[in-house]
Image 1 (spheres, rainbow, N blue to C red):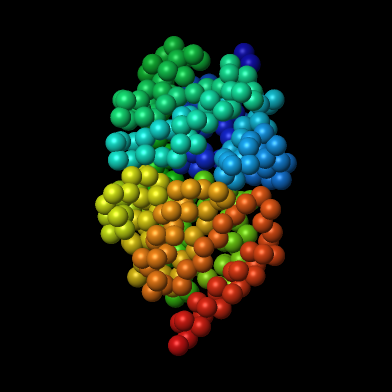
Image 2: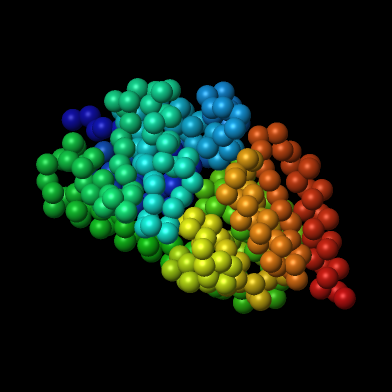
Length: 304
């Protein structure tokens, strides 16, 4: 019997739940197809099918979804709204499904909600989807628990690797960005590689344990209610005295980042900070110029 092909866009929440999703659908008997790393073909697809006001990250996601649309039976497109009353997310995550179904067939989209204020949880959403492919509830529960366990083990492995990096004598720069930007090669790979080639260790805000990050975010603000921004700011205050500088990476035109990052820069003037805003027209040459100058500042500060 031919397996159902489930497409998972390699963007947005793939970098938070990707291992869980892939494991889950494979165990219930589906074939999972991932879109490739972001490239200019995918970026062009996204740019041509979104309005200019959309951020680069969103354009990339739409590009990945469209890339998969002719290669799969279904595409997983979760709707993320909130994780609690005071843990909201960008409205783009609320409306991705509604926007995407105007471009591709609604029948091709597998959708579930994460909206804890209305008791919509990931497990129940995935269970409902899986019940269309298998009527064995025990298999579905096992698939979810197995996927979640593999996701957690991968997260812990990265956390331990970062702890070991902090013990090294090299200069360290904390890169603060959303998980879907830090892990997207088109957005961040050149920046990370440039730092490493200059013997600087990049420390990632997204790697810190989320509970720890949420606790430390109180040092930044006790009224910030964007969940992912909380995690970013919590990482800033957790690593603040273990690093030599900070690089903020955001995609144009992210309203949340423009507010939160600028406030963080104003509150942390004792550290050298570089604020990079990436759009579809940015070049490696322009990034290199900024990074080279920033590294010179880091070395100058530490040599005084």
